[in-house]
Figure 1 (cartoon, rainbow, N blue to C red):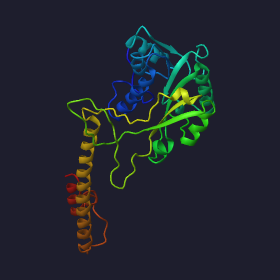
Figure 2: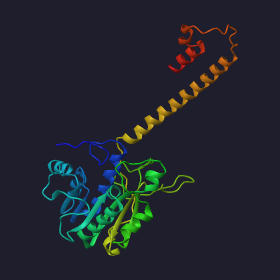
Figure 3: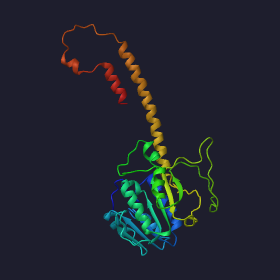
Figure 4: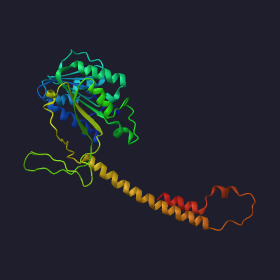
Length: 307
């Protein structure tokens, strides 16, 4: 069986920037998942749980959509991987069952009361020394600055609101930011990279404002000892996103130039029309044919606009 993309959840046959955003989170999550019992809340199409299962001891993917769970079970069946249908606020599994719980782009899809219930449920399922990794869109960047409203988002959070929600259960938080952008990358061709650095462009901040937050949550600092400060990249080796941007940019430049040309032609025709002498004909009723037939200047304008 297959799923249809509606915009509510990511599918692996999607294209564009959404691909890099979603895969990047799961690749990062794998760094802490090795040998652990892992829960993936809102596992969706199932690709992320499957990736985690390549390094984890066991993985359970939970999603409210029975259709998504059936799809994932068929497409990503694996001995140490199980998918179950359940709400993120009520997961039918025992207390303290997991070393590591991840949930990406989930919390904004439910209202405030459900958000509290969701985090309470994660806290119940997580071992006392476990780690919870969550991602959430940064409302000021994701929506407010763009004037954009995602129809599937019920309650987006800013950093302070997310901090308040998370700190109620986990006093130790390590924050990371995620945002798709254009970067100049220099790498060693003949050997594996051993060092990563980031440089700010002249007069610019080192990093932009995060589009998404990724937060590691724990009850003790010791539980987060393996989380190191780092910069990670997911490669657009096919130049798919950059290529799409470059094509769009070129088209916009051409359209802008064409628009300016048309504005000049309209202005010239308007001046010409106004300079033509007014008609001195009789004020008798205008024949129907002349009402239907457009003025010559209007014909010329229409032809120019039509190219």
